Image 1 (tube, helix red, strand yellow):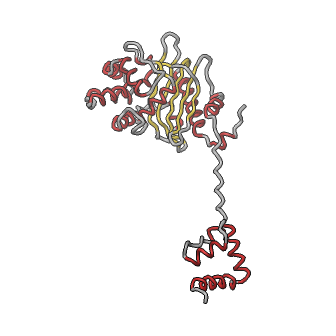
Image 2 (spheres, one colour):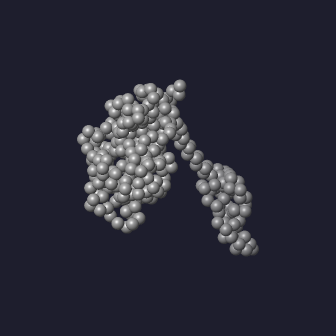
Length: 325
């Protein structure tokens, strides 16, 4: 008589065969697809020596990989700005430089090189240096310092700027603070000539980053940054020109500088700040010199500001399709 083990094996074999041609073929194909011999799997299943691999898992084709999203077209923002500036009217002998950063996208654009007199835009730098020194000393600004700071930024008062210039240690103190702020092309003016501090548009953009940046991006504390921003948003009537010309309504904070040079009679006209233009928050610095009048200089700075914001915020698809000639 056959042993119980032999009878069980025979019964299993009968079930497999009785499944019909289709079932038998399916079983064989499944085992072949999985790389396991049918007879080996049947024996393993019948004897309890190992599980039969799931047929469905072996038959399902692999899911096709999702196609990679096309990369955004690279945009030469500097070239865009250069083309836009070619349409801006610049007087013979005048020079202009622009630097702009779109805070939302990180896109930036620059135009022009060289150093310019700061005129009164250095007052933001003076206040930033004062606040940094106060932080280092673990103290708050005195009431007198606050009064000077307000008059210096809001009304562009020169006597107040001179008082705080002395407090920070004049050019030596400004340069030490700027080294920590990351400014590499700015040098404080000689003696009490703070308005003749030399700077670049790129450095002014870096300074604005210190004022309008976040924790971890600035040497200034959140309280110090908020203090400077508040004053730059309260500029006196009649001084709210420059980068504010491109802002959506009153969504701006700025400091302007204007200085007639006694040797030439020509004007330095500068404007720096944060603006919201067409829904984009941007930091913007425009420097110029050699302007025949203050009015002509303001017109140049405002036109350059518009060109800068347009170049930095242009949609990549449309910008990449723009003519390059």
